[in-house]
Length: 119
Image 1 (cartoon, helix red, strand yellow):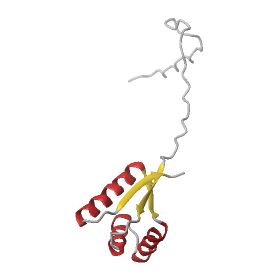
Image 2: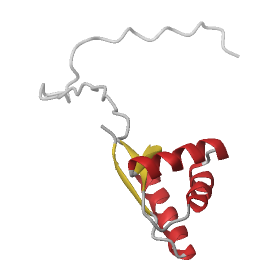
Image 3: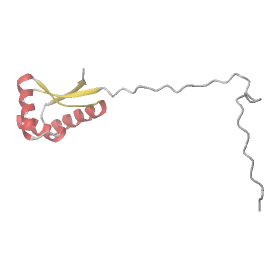
Image 4: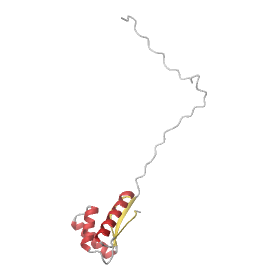
């Protein structure tokens, strides 16, 4: 059994150690400002052959819009020649375009869908 009280270690000395030759480099951590990803808008384009009801169904299915909103978007496409169906990151927008084009192709409609950078 120990009868002596342990000694405290000596305080550290702020002198360079013998192995330090003064050529040390201290790197500062710089905080990086992370920018949000560029957003892309997905547009449907008007044509004279695709039925309006099909366009409404596509907007509901692939862009998760209710029937009333999908109908309003479809009318905007019909009247203005194109309309934004949603705004997404680049990869998601590309996937939406592919899904719409594939659905149109399988249904035999020439519906066109594109994505472009949001300004």
